[in-house]
Image (cartoon, rainbow, N blue to C red; front, side, top):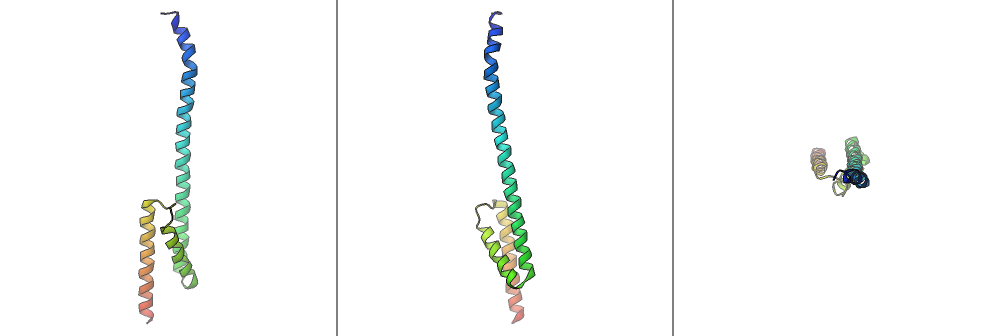
Length: 105
């Protein structure tokens, strides 16, 4: 039995190396996916901020901002929790617009 231990050690080393490589690859892939999701989310929130800024400028910029918010709300890139925020902003802008139009009359 003692004669087999060195042989088993030598034989198991490549298996352990392959297993370690596979685990490392999976973990690296998950980290890269999470980083990409975070990057997309940050970019999308930047676009929401840009659109809301356009809305606050009034005039033609307001129309562009409202259109951008509507497009972002229906985007597949928007996470569910971000969709709720974007929709709340969109609805607030719509209410603000209807209040402004009513006061102009």
